[in-house]
Amino acid sequence: MKIIRRAYLALFALYLIGPIVIIIAVSFNSKRFLAFPPRGFSFRWYAEIFVANDWFSSLMNSLFIAFASATLAVLIATPIAYCAWRFGLRYAKALFALGIAPFILPPVILALAFLLFFSSVGMHGWMLNVIIGHAIFLLALPLVTISLGLESVDRSLIEASQSMGADNATVFRTVILPIAAPFAFAGFAFCFVLSLNEYIIALMTVGFTVETLPIKIFNALRYGYTPVIASIAVLFLLINIAVFSLIAKFSNLSRILGAMD
Image 1 (tube, rainbow, N blue to C red):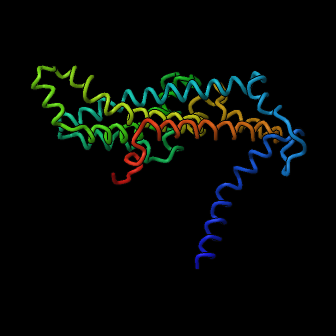
Image 2 (cartoon, one colour; image 1 turned 90 degrees about the vertical axis):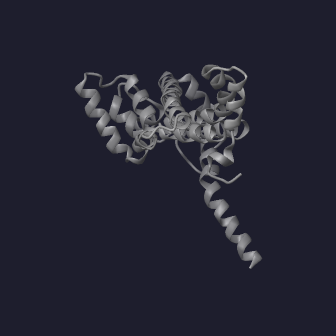
Image 3 (cartoon, one colour; image 1 turned 180 degrees about the vertical axis):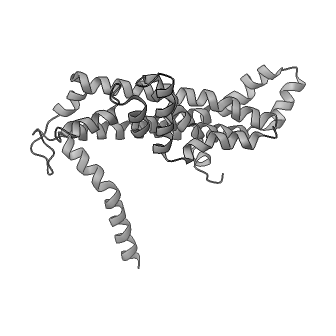
């Protein structure tokens, strides 16, 4: 039974890691087409991401949109989560459900709603549309993580600081914010990663007027399959690893993932 178990785990690991290994190998192909095993070895496709104006522009668009939308989502989620936790509002659950609702809906439905709204107000094709769309779509992530952080605040610390003359602003800055900040960062990081990889909402809100990397990849696939696409996939993988490593280092990852302390 132990041999069977180990063989099963090995096959499962190969199933998960195999495609990643293939993509990494293909990204170093020296020929101008996707091939595995790779034909030669070259870094030219990684260099093309930063040298070719169209790819680099798409990369900058994606990074800016991801950063801006993640920041906006955290700024919206923070007061909602704080008011629901601090004051025990009767309609707190309704606010929480309202924040999570966009994440529950299929992205194509939300993208169509954004398309109709922005077109009706004459804003179709603006980069701001993607930032707003991603912030609303991903709002549930910082809302959940910040709420978890606030729940970990010991209310006796608040009472102690108030008994020593601290006002609400001082209590928030010196007691609540340092505890909740790592959870807010985790929500920001989750939003950043998902916004960076999101395609449907970006396409429906800006079309092809603002090319993000996912949109650029889709456009490039119509003209051929070059290893630069594989190199971008590896770049996304490295960004994801870096972001989640930061979450694990600076946030309570086990609590965020729902594990019991």
